[in-house]
Image (cartoon, rainbow, N blue to C red; front, side, top):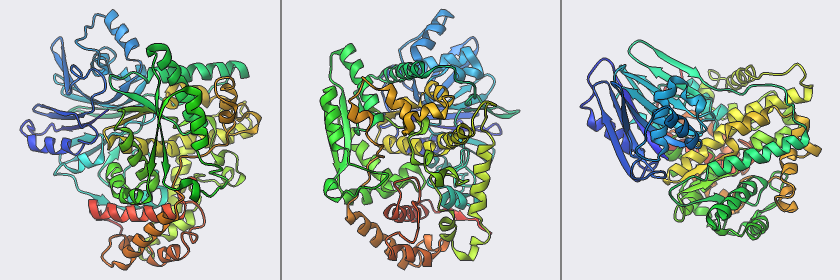
Length: 616
């Protein structure tokens, strides 16, 4: 994995702007700790930071190839999982290759397929290709936005990068937080609207989109979307197809020239990924798979059972390690670490995020990186196969808003009363919710129940899943570490999208169909274990730490958050240990302590990025 940067300017010669490009590229050094590379020309400059995974010697970037009288130059972040299939097609059509990197295959695939190249890719990617003859840039992002890509226009410059921090390093970019940004932070956050960043000038290239920019035009186009069509397979055929697609996705994603393993929580999803990966490793290499899990100091002692987290993971992890015979390592994190890494998590994301859920990921990956460079994760299964509580709870099904973020009145109340009347968070969220639902396609044969769950799954795929994918990418890449998500193979999502809810929720269980599909492959205890989310700390000391820090911020009249937020309400939240905010801030995990930590992150973000506030 890597980080990319680019500047295109058709009005002036920018070939001598070495310092600007180097400084921008340097901000992405954690994404690509192994080496950097640059391309300079009159109207386009490209930068690259590399995390070497495939073809370490011949996969260097920027990479160029000359076909006829045109030189094409690529900077690329990602991994193409069907590289060999594309390479075979290109070889049949006369292309030759110097190495075995997917970068070279992607570059020459663009030469062959042109602007429709993304329709032929299965992978995770954000890349840019410069055509020196036509002086045209093509940039694209993968189907689900697993790899990030942002852009901005400023003073005739078209600027793009894997992360916002690189764009902010360009001298022409201002950091401005306007009403939209405030609504994103406090109405949508830690999620975000696709295509938008909290910074006024900076946009996100949406998943499954590409941009073509030249002297005459700027075109942004969607190259893929979910297609609604009848599901014709019966139950057994559906299970067989799911098993095939999952196994194939896992095996395709195990390609690497550096050490690779899986993240194993003992839940259904990570156990499926580890099972297929372990089988492949034994069959192909005769080796044991490396697996890793995360836990917290004194977690068993402090754990409090609830509807969302019915049990801890250790028993189930040990069961799967014994079942698969993996080389397993447990990473144990302590409470002070989680708090001390909150700011690093903000820097990694460039925005406030999921508080200690982010920082624990960051620390987990930091420790796993000591042994391997690439890991496969079970993320995205709940979104695709119906694993979340809101697919089943009446209050969520009938909420008429994003079901993971129901506390809209409380979110509105967080804003400073001096200007909250001019910023209507509820209306903003309603608008985004309705815009998203308007894109859902139904069949005439869909039952009312299937229509309702199709809506929920669409929302979850495009909002909640995106938030988790952002978290994973930023926290792993901040450590020069790569995480892959086999469940998020677009073929699996396409197929599952059209499976009727009544089949997907087989026997009324969350992920009932997926569970049934795995019978005979995994232990029954794993298959029918009740869903338990990513483990958060239950240590009461964490609440004490974040409460003390947020109290300090409230006492500091110069703390930037005090200008934006309702101090009285935050003091109520502190006084009640978060209970004044009646529902979780986001999802299932972000309750009182995590809300306090989110507010602390907002203050950290305001202090570090120092945006100009445009409210009135």
